[in-house]
Length: 197
Image 1 (spheres, rainbow, N blue to C red):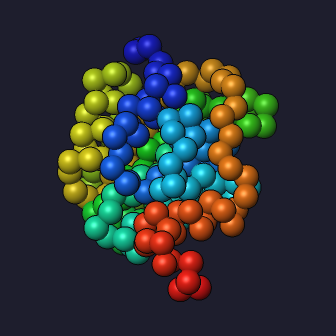
Image 2: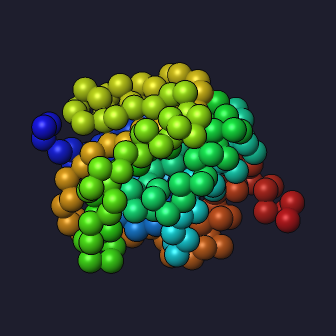
């Protein structure tokens, strides 16, 4: 088996020179990871909304079809929202990529093992839902391929990155939900976005 990848190194690689790409960070470690890579106005870290990252990403992708949208989430959150894969596969937004960082544990609640530890295959589930573009990521070469697919290809993408279940220092994004929402809206829609409410 390949040596497990390090989550923050993977996320930094995926978000380097992101050029305004909209990025949703799933609840917990994924939000810390996107913040560690650089707290950008087009980042949307989830606070207290486990299971919602993929559908928030779908909404962003449909509302802004000319912009790339990327969801970075964990295996625990993805297991909680498997039904979202069916909806996303039917909608088929060409600009949406979903990356699951799979450490086979619930990292925020005590490192209990998730179902992926026992063979549940999220890539196969996504394929069954109708995703045409999927990828299993186990090596640095796979990470480079994933980055290329996100930035240079079209079509809804689902990828699982097998990562080390390491405990890392928290790198917290802003906690103010209104601030996160408003800065995101201004970054995507322009400075007059707040006057449209």
